[in-house]
Amino acid sequence: MDSVFFIKALKQELRSSRVTYKDLSKTLKMTEAGVKKLLNKQDLSLKRANSICEAIGVSMYDIMKAAEEATMKDQRFSEEQTQFFLENPNYFNFYMQLAYEQKSPQEIQDKNLSQQSVFRYLKKLDDLKLIKLLPGNKVHFPDGKVGSVSTLGTPLEKIKHILTLKFVKKVSRSSNGMIFGGVFFLSEEENTSLLEELKEIQHKYTKRSLANRSLKKLNDKLKYSTITNMIAMSPTSLFEDIENL
Image (cartoon, rainbow, N blue to C red; front, side, top):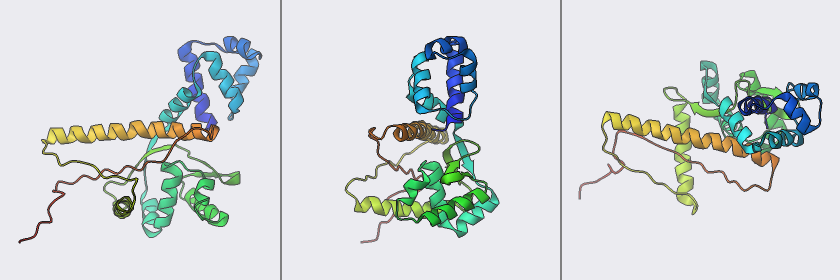
């Protein structure tokens, strides 16, 4: 849980609920000055955060969701960052797991990486100003968590195409994956509407995913699973490969 953004969302909920620091101090059995100090810190314990949520009649999940939604950003890469990822695609994969999939450095390390390798990845991403590396290999995203990564119109689209092809091959070898879609005959206006609706769905479930990841860190008993969904669009037919008989 990113306490800084969580506290901001909590303060917003207090204002919306018209709960004063004085009201909160009575419920928490603290002084009003103590409550003010608590909510102006950079960190907040899980126990204390839960107590405050209960006091104002809101769930931890709702506050976390609000915090995640308020901090999501569309990540775009500079020319320097783009060029580095093109030359070092492993770093792109590491960054995407760290930033977009919101995996911790330890979770990535558990996929057969050495601790030294993980530190090198993190150090370089810090040098590129994509993350802020903190002691103990902890990571902070200075501009907020990554809700989407935009590579459209950049050379990084090539990497995404390669990854997509690899993903489709994995799905074809798996009994769990699926491929579904459609071929649509649409006007320009309808095509624009389709794209907007797909983006809305992507953002909706990205926000929910980020909140769920925060909850999972707080309670390992909650059941979630990672689902990768890809959408490919092109003004061509899917079924063009027809040979003469």
